[in-house]
Image 1 (spheres, rainbow, N blue to C red):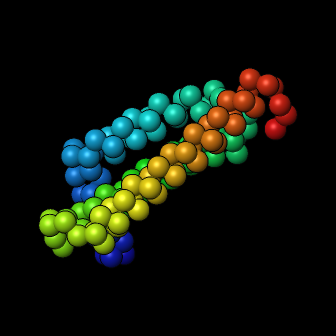
Image 2 (cartoon, rainbow, N blue to C red):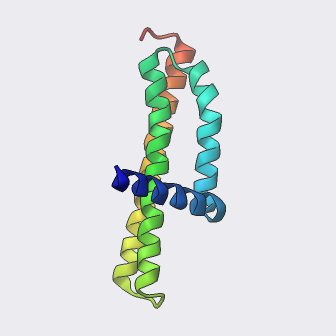
Length: 119
């Protein structure tokens, strides 16, 4: 149980640092806050709502991992290194892919709502 408490404390510390220093993380948390009521109005089922909110959480998850990659790379070396650049670029690409995926899910939900398609 002690290990779980420590892991929770570490997670809260990371959240605090990210929310105060990472603009992208702040924007994605803002997006989550907005998506909670909008998703409720847009979704045609509980499963749909869970998917809409879940995909926003996936974007946040990928952003957190990307930030971790960047921090680890910066701790290793601040000098230019092609492999470090690739690691950071891959993290950025992962964020982009998750955002495109989220846009697709939300776009389909909007189309379903507008067209009045059955669940």
